[in-house]
Each structure stands twice: as C-alpha cells, then as structure tokens.
Image (cartoon, rainbow, N blue to C red; front, top):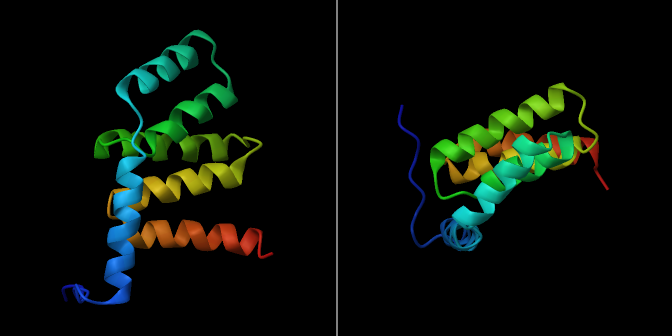
Length: 116
C-alpha cells in the first residue's frame, strides 16, 4: 500500500515545506566541510569527528548525509560523551534524506531520555 500524500494546503504540509526551506539554507559551504575533514584526519579525536559529522548532516548531498549518520552512529556505539547531540544530528540527516520514520524515531528517543 502506498503512503497517503499530504494535502498541499494542510498545515502539516506547509510546516514541512517551511522546515525544508530553513534546513536547505543551513547547508555548509564546501570549504567548511573540507577544513573539518582535514582537521579530523590530521588530529583525530571524537570531538573533531563529531564536528565533521554534524556539519555533514546538513550537506546538500544525500550521500554525505548518509555518511554523517554512519559516523554519528559509530560515535554512539563507541560511547561518545555527547550521544544526544549525535542522535539529533542523525535525525536531521534522516529528515533531509526523506527518511521521516527514522527521523521521528530518533527524535522520540531524545524525548524519552530527556522528557523535561
């Protein structure tokens, strides 16, 4: 069964378009990504890796966003100190890759761990 398309006049649809527009405008410059990649390679640390991956989450490239999710998931598995930030970044990348169910699950896990 195909998913139901949202009504283009609905508030939900309009809200999604507004979010998409704001996130699209937040895409990092290629020079920024390259500088972070060099920093990550020349001075490897979980914090440098996180900064690079988090920046990739807002990339214009779906492949780069998928790579960011992989990096962030690995940081979580390795016990990185800022796990909620990793989940948040992964949720952003999932949303931008139109993996809405994955993004929602990640947001719900954040809310479960920090309900206040």
